Amino acid sequence: MTTQTNTQLEVCETNCEHEEITSKLRELLQEEEIVGMAQIFKALSDPNRVKIAFLLDQGKELCVCDIAALLDCSVATASHHLRQLKSSHITKSRKEGKNVYYSLKDHHIQTLIAMTLEHQREKSDHE
Image 1 (cartoon, rainbow, N blue to C red):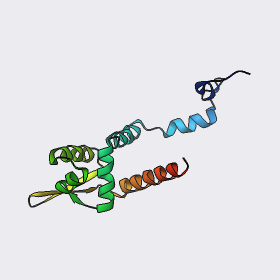
Image 2 (cartoon, helix red, strand yellow; image 1 turned 90 degrees about the horizontal axis):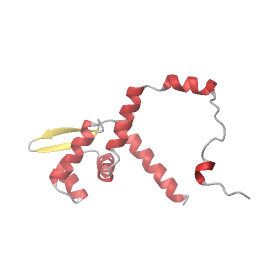
Image 3 (cartoon, rainbow, N blue to C red; image 1 turned 90 degrees about the vertical axis):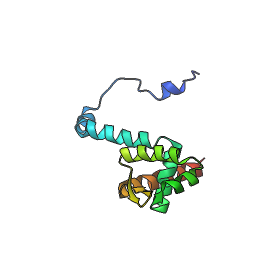
Image 4 (cartoon, rainbow, N blue to C red; image 1 turned 120 degrees about the horizontal axis):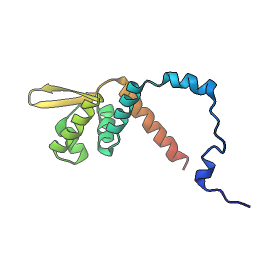
């Protein structure tokens, strides 16, 4: 009996493109949209930025000082992460007096955070 490696089990043994499927899917690929989606995931690839997004989802709006306290980091570090999230259109900010408050940009980001958390909890339940 021959033992197959995991790689062999994950690769087609013959090269056959199903053109009726791939031609339709190829039309759906919009490079600009895909790049934008990748930028969102890249911005959320850091655990601290995911924490911030989660905290903003739960708290709705937090000032930079609150976020720094919750992450147990400096205000400068929190500001750095918030700038990255804002430049990726994940958060928005407003200034009130001497404080800057952040919130999630829109309901799409809230849905992304909620769905990702739900997926993670389901994954953990099945392990």
